[in-house]
Image (tube, rainbow, N blue to C red; front, top):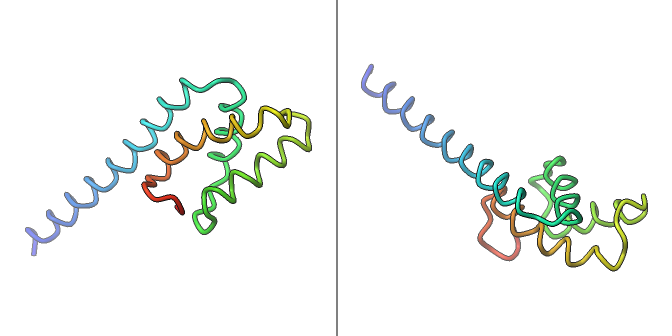
Length: 98
């Protein structure tokens, strides 16, 4: 019985470290972003909606940033594309529809 509890505890610790590593890697990635892309990254990363696809979440947040005059329309697409790379790391996404 005690051996089983130890294995479960070890398994939970390993999973917790993996999730933390993704956040660290995403933060490192975000540190290299241009200012507009960092704005998009912060807006999307601050609102966790796992039920929504990453693309629709980025579209919604970028639209809000444009309407609030925090992001220019001509800078929106490149900023979203650049930020999406770091957001994929934070969500641990490898597929196109994550």
